[in-house]
Image (cartoon, rainbow, N blue to C red; front, top):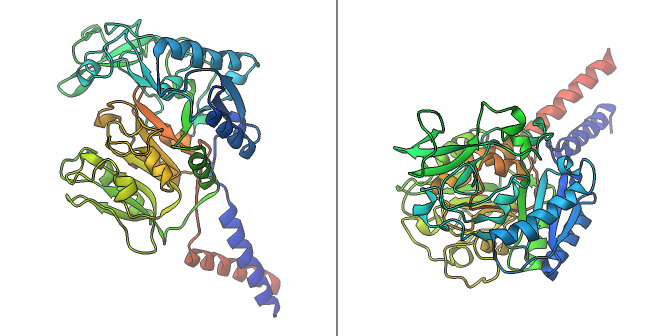
Length: 455
């Protein structure tokens, strides 16, 4: 082999290994993760052990609560929230070091509350809706999310809390966590003619068309809710321990191949997504990703041979063609890429983690069962505005190198609501370099080295 050929082979091979191995920017590490296990659930304990063995440095907190899907808010406080608070307070600095809290199969995922008027859609917009997901309430761990019969500053669990991290497009470590344990001062948000209206002297608190709360800009910074005051809460769950651990394994070292991996965005004329799918298609398509975008009444159930679904979004049972509640198991003829993501406009797709034969909409647990890795779900009626935004989380994951937990919460408009985020919070995506780009880079380095050797 000539010297030039030797250098070419060495440099090109080195470029290939180097580019394939370059990690995306990750603001989270295992030391920032706290896994919650329910000692009354063998599944929860097993999943917690599996995860922390895979991610040495992650912490575990043990709680003892019901294994039922739901619990009262008062029990949430005493059996879940308060034990986690005590654990974080047991070590100086741990409350700010932990950024992501991870719940597990066997930890309840729904909160009910007789103090308000439940999860009915009417009550949600009268400021008295108090149902939520356990995980969404845990994002505000240090806030006293008390519910009440009326929409007042003393009952911030009524309605929603506007997410200050929404559409930040920034790593979570860009924000100070020094005030995370400080109580915030809430300001009311109402809806008037379809627009959000914040509390002001001319627009005081009202129970009519109430939406929720944000924090007053006139307050000291420590009393305003900022992105650094949140825990990014994800859940490791599915119908069985094996399905959950398989999904965790599929979420490690995710490498995206633009030539085979596709993004499915399946909408119809009803436009539930409000243009989000179209925006995501434009952003990711311009970046060279393959998009299967459909806006007809035809339900997308397959992709060309050889393609793997990296992200699946649709209207689910709310589509013009109703595929039935078992459509993920029986109708979608997809093969899934590692790291595959699920998100649909279905009200209850995060309700069921115990019954694969369910009869209510499609479930994110079905997606995990079929080979998916990550996803979003709703434990009660979220309304279409509350569904995570593809144009944000896909951009964060595929173009900015954010972790799954960061991308997910960057794309969710509200907290203390119905949302669940499924999957390993530390999951990141890297793009397998395209051969043509590698060849040009390798050739450029060879020419540079050759010229230097002749000089």
